[in-house]
Image (cartoon, rainbow, N blue to C red; front, side, top):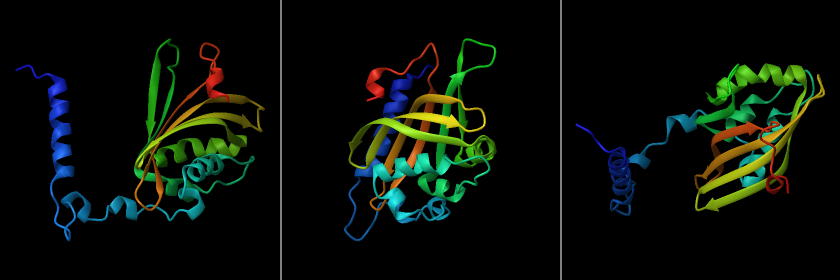
Length: 193
């Protein structure tokens, strides 16, 4: 039997919409909100200034990965910015190929794989410009970055696409997707202003 994926997606969306819009008694929360997420409970406490605004959480994201050669990073601070289910993803060319791939990591994967390199090379990243869209508790930040490393004096630019949500108390990073500039893909002027 052939099933049209559009109808499957639409059906799932409608089921979710019905769950979210079901009438709720004044003293009763919807079932999906009754329990505190055990995942969020396990997240390290965040600095208030880091998570009270979009500006704060984006600044903290850049700050927490930046530092000199041998300078330890505060990985619990980094974890406190993200929901534990968050993903950090990188788009890049595959080795020995014209094709591109997507590397998908948890925050802990990123810390384990990239953390030692950041400390060894004296990696620093700063924001050059930003475009932010927000509606309700949903926000998307397209932030242009520049990195440099003390060890080999290399400079690179690219774009971080950061998806955020506000839970009524604070901002959380849900996902981070980035791609580096390369000769065939220069940053347009619109993302440098």
